[in-house]
Amino acid sequence: MKTINSIYNKPQGTQIKNSTHHLLKLSIMKIIPLALLALTLYGCSPKPQTQQAPPPPSLPVAAIASGTQTTYQEYPASIEGTVNVEVRPQVSGTLDKVFVDEGAFVSAGEPIFKINEQPYRAALNNSLASLHAAEAAAGNAQLEVDKLTPLVENKVVSDYQLKTAKAAYQVAKANIESAKANVATAQINVGYTLIKAPVSGYIGRLLKKQGSLVTPQDVEALTQLSDVHDVHVYFSLGEKDFISFKEQYPGETLKDKLKRLPSVSLLLADGSEYAKQGKIDVIDGQFDKNTGAITIRANFANPQGLLRAGNTGKIRLSLQHTDALIVPESATVEMQDKVFVFAVADSNKVKKVPINIIGKSGENYLVKDGLKVGDQIVLSGMDHLMEGMVIAPQKTTDKVAAVVK
Image (cartoon, rainbow, N blue to C red):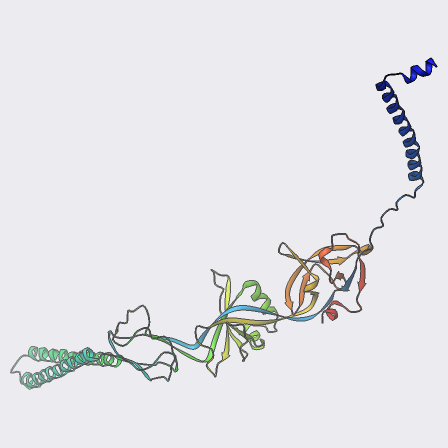
């Protein structure tokens, strides 16, 4: 009884401490079996399977083909009339009349300007008076010679006087010729006061108006006159393009080649094509040392006057390429100013190959080197391709040219 009582009579703090220790011990004993059971179950669970690699992408491929293709190259061009002249005054004076308006068509010999002729008419009258005086002086000199001739024959006077009279007569005749020349000059100057159209054509801008003072030394012309029934279109080719241009067409000499050249097209400033075809008829004799280019002229008919001198445009030349390799533009990738295709190599691995483009026909590139006939290239889906990547080729039944067509 004492022992029991002593137990129950223990201090309350000691009793609580022992109870807490007992409960913690029981909790640990319950957790350990549960942990062992969890480890056992985890060890017995199936291991996760390794993730499989995705299949190679299936992309369309085709074989490179070759054929004859026509490419077009465009060159900036300037247009001039077959006759394009500046109208300038030959004498100075006030512009009294302007007979035409800008853009008007005039025929050769038609008056277009009139300069005040009064000063030149006065000069003509003065020259005529001088001519008459010279003719009178020559008459007097002739009379003197006629008077002295018989006196010398009869030895009344010495022949010295006759010789002097004859010399004076020759001077008088020379004065007549000089006076006639002055009259002709004065007449020419009077004629220059009426300015006529030197050729048939269209009037350009009228830079001088009625009442303006004009001189032959003026920097600007009175106007320009252009005959544009036919027009000359000038464009330039670089040395490399000119060599290729000559090699395209048969003929021993450049003159023979000109006869066999095909017609050329003219693109106007708005991009539209001029209705009529032109013919190359002149090639400059030498290259420009500053630009390294040679000038070529094409002639175009202009019956409706749609083209005018000063127009600009582009000449389109056609070039034939035989056995050119054909690659669709959509099958190429451009990087750092270079063009690549993805060629299918061994084991269906793709390889990035640079190509050298010599021209374009429609949506096709014409390739000079980098590929050969029969090479397989990827036609689409190149955005996600990398060097050495394996693909599943989806071969087409036709060549590249047929696919693109």
